[in-house]
Length: 234
Image (cartoon, rainbow, N blue to C red; front, side, top):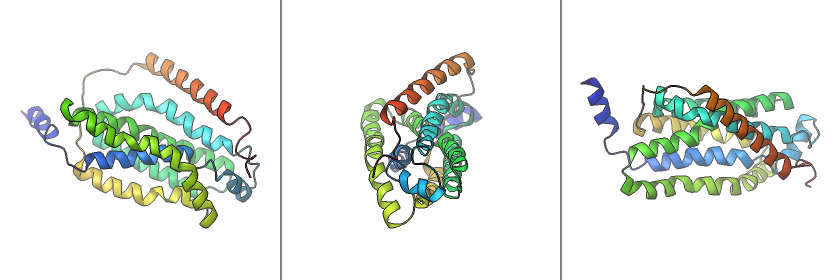
Protein backbone atom coordinates (compact mmCIF):
# COMPACT_ATOMS: atom_id res chain seq x y z
CA UNK A 1 0.00 0.00 0.00
CA UNK A 2 2.85 2.39 0.83
CA UNK A 3 4.49 1.67 -2.52
CA UNK A 4 1.23 2.37 -4.33
CA UNK A 5 0.83 5.65 -2.44
CA UNK A 6 4.37 6.75 -3.32
CA UNK A 7 3.80 5.84 -6.95
CA UNK A 8 0.59 7.87 -7.08
CA UNK A 9 2.31 10.87 -5.53
CA UNK A 10 5.22 10.76 -7.96
CA UNK A 11 2.89 10.44 -10.94
CA UNK A 12 0.82 13.48 -9.97
CA UNK A 13 0.84 16.52 -12.26
CA UNK A 14 4.31 18.12 -12.09
CA UNK A 15 4.76 21.78 -11.29
CA UNK A 16 4.64 24.17 -14.22
CA UNK A 17 7.99 25.53 -13.01
CA UNK A 18 9.74 22.15 -13.23
CA UNK A 19 10.95 22.65 -16.84
CA UNK A 20 12.38 26.06 -15.86
CA UNK A 21 14.28 24.54 -12.92
CA UNK A 22 15.72 21.81 -15.10
CA UNK A 23 16.56 24.32 -17.85
CA UNK A 24 18.54 26.47 -15.40
CA UNK A 25 20.43 23.43 -14.09
CA UNK A 26 21.38 22.33 -17.60
CA UNK A 27 22.39 25.90 -18.44
CA UNK A 28 24.69 26.10 -15.40
CA UNK A 29 26.42 22.85 -16.29
CA UNK A 30 26.91 23.79 -19.94
CA UNK A 31 27.97 27.35 -19.15
CA UNK A 32 30.80 26.20 -16.90
CA UNK A 33 32.16 23.99 -19.67
CA UNK A 34 33.24 27.03 -21.72
CA UNK A 35 33.16 30.04 -19.39
CA UNK A 36 36.90 29.83 -18.64
CA UNK A 37 38.01 30.03 -22.27
CA UNK A 38 38.43 33.81 -22.38
CA UNK A 39 39.44 34.15 -18.73
CA UNK A 40 42.45 31.84 -18.68
CA UNK A 41 45.17 34.46 -19.45
CA UNK A 42 44.20 36.70 -16.52
CA UNK A 43 43.68 33.71 -14.26
CA UNK A 44 47.15 32.49 -15.20
CA UNK A 45 48.67 35.87 -14.36
CA UNK A 46 46.94 35.95 -10.99
CA UNK A 47 48.01 32.41 -10.09
CA UNK A 48 51.53 32.83 -11.46
CA UNK A 49 51.14 30.11 -14.06
CA UNK A 50 51.68 29.82 -17.79
CA UNK A 51 48.43 30.36 -19.77
CA UNK A 52 49.25 27.12 -21.58
CA UNK A 53 49.08 25.14 -18.32
CA UNK A 54 45.70 26.67 -17.44
CA UNK A 55 44.07 24.62 -20.20
CA UNK A 56 44.17 21.68 -17.78
CA UNK A 57 41.33 23.28 -15.78
CA UNK A 58 39.01 22.98 -18.78
CA UNK A 59 40.16 19.45 -19.60
CA UNK A 60 39.72 18.32 -15.97
CA UNK A 61 36.09 19.48 -15.97
CA UNK A 62 35.30 17.90 -19.35
CA UNK A 63 36.88 14.56 -18.45
CA UNK A 64 35.11 14.43 -15.09
CA UNK A 65 31.79 14.93 -16.87
CA UNK A 66 32.62 12.12 -19.29
CA UNK A 67 33.59 9.73 -16.50
CA UNK A 68 30.74 10.42 -14.09
CA UNK A 69 27.73 10.83 -16.39
CA UNK A 70 27.29 7.06 -16.94
CA UNK A 71 26.66 6.69 -13.18
CA UNK A 72 23.72 9.11 -13.16
CA UNK A 73 21.08 6.65 -14.32
CA UNK A 74 21.99 3.99 -11.76
CA UNK A 75 22.26 6.48 -8.90
CA UNK A 76 18.96 8.17 -9.74
CA UNK A 77 17.20 4.79 -9.63
CA UNK A 78 18.70 3.92 -6.26
CA UNK A 79 18.69 7.31 -4.54
CA UNK A 80 15.79 9.05 -6.29
CA UNK A 81 15.83 11.85 -8.81
CA UNK A 82 15.14 14.67 -6.34
CA UNK A 83 17.70 13.52 -3.78
CA UNK A 84 20.37 12.98 -6.41
CA UNK A 85 19.59 16.31 -8.10
CA UNK A 86 19.88 18.16 -4.79
CA UNK A 87 23.11 16.33 -3.95
CA UNK A 88 24.50 17.26 -7.37
CA UNK A 89 23.64 20.91 -6.78
CA UNK A 90 25.37 20.84 -3.38
CA UNK A 91 28.53 19.32 -4.86
CA UNK A 92 28.43 21.74 -7.81
CA UNK A 93 28.12 24.77 -5.50
CA UNK A 94 30.84 23.42 -3.21
CA UNK A 95 33.12 22.90 -6.21
CA UNK A 96 32.41 26.45 -7.38
CA UNK A 97 33.34 27.84 -3.95
CA UNK A 98 36.55 25.82 -3.95
CA UNK A 99 37.39 27.13 -7.43
CA UNK A 100 36.90 30.72 -6.30
CA UNK A 101 39.06 30.11 -3.22
CA UNK A 102 41.89 28.43 -5.16
CA UNK A 103 45.34 30.00 -4.81
CA UNK A 104 47.21 27.63 -7.11
CA UNK A 105 46.67 25.72 -10.33
CA UNK A 106 46.68 22.39 -8.49
CA UNK A 107 43.92 23.55 -6.13
CA UNK A 108 41.93 24.87 -9.07
CA UNK A 109 42.16 21.60 -10.98
CA UNK A 110 41.01 19.61 -7.93
CA UNK A 111 38.15 22.05 -7.39
CA UNK A 112 37.14 21.75 -11.06
CA UNK A 113 37.00 17.96 -10.65
CA UNK A 114 34.67 18.40 -7.66
CA UNK A 115 32.57 20.82 -9.67
CA UNK A 116 32.50 18.35 -12.56
CA UNK A 117 31.22 15.55 -10.33
CA UNK A 118 28.20 17.68 -9.44
CA UNK A 119 27.72 18.96 -12.96
CA UNK A 120 27.86 15.44 -14.39
CA UNK A 121 24.63 14.56 -12.58
CA UNK A 122 22.64 17.71 -13.36
CA UNK A 123 21.89 17.22 -17.05
CA UNK A 124 21.20 13.44 -17.08
CA UNK A 125 19.01 13.55 -13.97
CA UNK A 126 17.07 16.50 -15.38
CA UNK A 127 16.34 14.56 -18.54
CA UNK A 128 15.42 11.39 -16.64
CA UNK A 129 13.01 13.39 -14.51
CA UNK A 130 11.29 14.84 -17.56
CA UNK A 131 10.97 11.40 -19.15
CA UNK A 132 9.19 10.08 -16.07
CA UNK A 133 7.18 13.16 -15.11
CA UNK A 134 5.43 13.93 -18.40
CA UNK A 135 3.22 12.00 -20.79
CA UNK A 136 4.53 11.25 -24.26
CA UNK A 137 2.15 13.81 -25.75
CA UNK A 138 3.85 16.63 -23.80
CA UNK A 139 7.36 15.23 -23.59
CA UNK A 140 8.74 16.66 -26.83
CA UNK A 141 7.62 20.21 -26.02
CA UNK A 142 8.98 20.06 -22.48
CA UNK A 143 12.27 18.54 -23.60
CA UNK A 144 12.79 21.22 -26.23
CA UNK A 145 12.12 23.95 -23.67
CA UNK A 146 14.45 22.53 -21.03
CA UNK A 147 17.27 21.36 -23.29
CA UNK A 148 17.51 24.63 -25.23
CA UNK A 149 19.99 26.05 -22.65
CA UNK A 150 22.33 23.22 -23.59
CA UNK A 151 22.77 25.00 -26.93
CA UNK A 152 22.92 28.52 -25.48
CA UNK A 153 25.28 27.84 -22.55
CA UNK A 154 28.44 27.04 -24.55
CA UNK A 155 27.85 30.13 -26.72
CA UNK A 156 27.40 32.53 -23.80
CA UNK A 157 30.18 30.99 -21.71
CA UNK A 158 33.17 32.81 -23.27
CA UNK A 159 31.23 36.10 -23.40
CA UNK A 160 30.19 35.93 -19.74
CA UNK A 161 33.66 34.82 -18.68
CA UNK A 162 35.35 37.67 -20.53
CA UNK A 163 32.93 40.24 -19.12
CA UNK A 164 33.36 39.08 -15.51
CA UNK A 165 37.17 39.05 -15.79
CA UNK A 166 37.33 42.52 -17.36
CA UNK A 167 34.88 44.27 -15.03
CA UNK A 168 35.12 42.24 -11.81
CA UNK A 169 37.53 39.35 -11.22
CA UNK A 170 37.86 35.73 -12.34
CA UNK A 171 36.57 34.56 -8.96
CA UNK A 172 33.08 35.73 -9.93
CA UNK A 173 33.04 33.19 -12.74
CA UNK A 174 32.56 30.58 -10.01
CA UNK A 175 30.83 32.65 -7.32
CA UNK A 176 28.03 33.31 -9.80
CA UNK A 177 26.98 29.67 -9.38
CA UNK A 178 26.49 29.95 -5.62
CA UNK A 179 23.27 32.02 -5.38
CA UNK A 180 21.80 30.26 -8.41
CA UNK A 181 22.59 26.87 -6.90
CA UNK A 182 21.17 27.76 -3.48
CA UNK A 183 17.94 29.02 -5.02
CA UNK A 184 17.83 25.86 -7.11
CA UNK A 185 18.14 23.73 -3.97
CA UNK A 186 15.23 25.49 -2.32
CA UNK A 187 13.02 25.21 -5.40
CA UNK A 188 13.99 21.57 -6.01
CA UNK A 189 12.85 20.56 -2.54
CA UNK A 190 9.32 21.79 -3.23
CA UNK A 191 8.61 21.06 -6.87
CA UNK A 192 10.81 18.23 -8.12
CA UNK A 193 9.37 14.68 -8.02
CA UNK A 194 11.49 11.90 -6.54
CA UNK A 195 11.35 8.97 -8.94
CA UNK A 196 13.27 5.86 -7.96
CA UNK A 197 13.52 2.20 -8.86
CA UNK A 198 14.95 -0.30 -6.41
CA UNK A 199 15.31 -3.12 -8.90
CA UNK A 200 18.28 -3.61 -11.20
CA UNK A 201 22.01 -3.89 -10.66
CA UNK A 202 25.06 -1.90 -11.50
CA UNK A 203 26.82 -2.96 -14.71
CA UNK A 204 30.42 -2.44 -13.64
CA UNK A 205 31.96 -3.75 -16.86
CA UNK A 206 29.68 -1.61 -19.00
CA UNK A 207 30.46 1.45 -16.89
CA UNK A 208 34.22 0.95 -17.20
CA UNK A 209 34.00 0.43 -20.97
CA UNK A 210 31.69 3.39 -21.57
CA UNK A 211 33.58 5.69 -19.20
CA UNK A 212 36.91 4.77 -20.81
CA UNK A 213 35.54 5.43 -24.29
CA UNK A 214 33.99 8.74 -23.21
CA UNK A 215 37.24 9.72 -21.48
CA UNK A 216 39.29 9.04 -24.61
CA UNK A 217 36.87 10.85 -26.91
CA UNK A 218 36.67 13.89 -24.62
CA UNK A 219 40.45 14.03 -24.20
CA UNK A 220 40.95 13.76 -27.97
CA UNK A 221 38.45 16.51 -28.71
CA UNK A 222 39.91 18.85 -26.10
CA UNK A 223 43.42 18.23 -27.45
CA UNK A 224 42.36 18.83 -31.05
CA UNK A 225 40.29 21.95 -30.28
CA UNK A 226 42.90 23.51 -27.98
CA UNK A 227 46.29 22.24 -29.11
CA UNK A 228 48.12 25.29 -27.75
CA UNK A 229 45.75 26.32 -24.94
CA UNK A 230 44.16 29.67 -24.52
CA UNK A 231 47.37 31.43 -23.68
CA UNK A 232 48.01 32.39 -27.28
CA UNK A 233 44.93 34.57 -27.32
CA UNK A 234 45.53 38.20 -26.54
